[in-house]
Image (cartoon, rainbow, N blue to C red; front, side, top):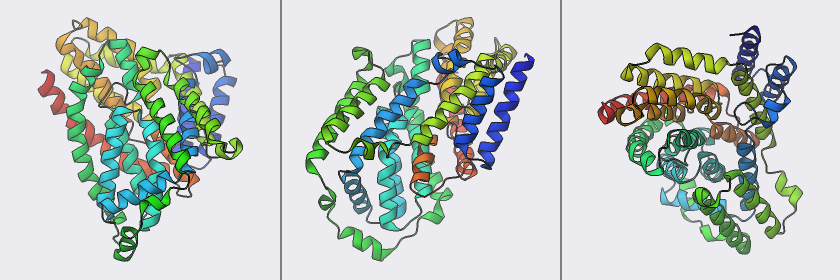
Length: 429
């Protein structure tokens, strides 16, 4: 690698250490790191702001912005309070059954939607449930975002890396559901068991509070029935448009921002008040992170690492599968899995073609998908959904630290990927 590439690695590593240790605000670190990358010439304005492969992913930014606007309006209807009371009553006020309900719902919905949209919708409900039960919300939020990353792996549209892989490999929605669906089901069952162990201190049952919750009428929580109907119609239209992406030829980001602006207009609410609900620091953090990772792409750092790894195992399909699986999980824990998969896809395509292109060789695509999707759970910045939930929690006064997330994420990732090893062997070898 060039001298500039090594400097870019040093800048990224320093920024990552500062984010991990939380000595400086993570938004300031991301913006500072991005500014240095631009100043030293590791990337430039054209790459940082206009490149699909090495710059800010505006589709992610505007998808988040649109969904945050929709959630901002929904918050004012009382619908989240309704769902919070409903779920708490279904579990009879017991914290662990409530977590199981929220985890399963999050995983299932994340398979149909993208995981970022799902956590944007589920997190406000979770905060309200925990407030009602007087239990710490952080374990619930961490469990949900991990469930969203696992559940999103099941389908082509559930996790952004899957969309990139599908476009490169030609794998269909059915292919993803057929191969990834059974694995995700197994991992979710194991994950629920892990939650019982990892978060056991959070499951404080208060009989008096549970009795008060059982006495509540969820219908009383709705504050504006007209706005509930309008919001659900717009949200339903947005979700339908997401699923008809290939027919409508509209990017999810365009659909989300149109839906958010339409709902804002129909709601008759003050636009400035709703805009305050948007997680602006989270969006800015993403922009800085994309620029820093884009600099590693532009200077050839990620490409050099990926090519060295693939050359070492060329012609050895099972070792190549294992290296790709574990390396993808490890690297997706460090950099966001979207730019990582975008960089690795052409290299995996070459490897698959070298192995014949069909049949058993397809396992390399699945190793990349599983590693990137499950590896996103390892750290607080491994997946877009993680960063979003950290922002929501911080805004609600419940700060999730980098290591507070990562100490659980590493356990879940290692176990999830380990389960995938025998699954891939039995399925393809």
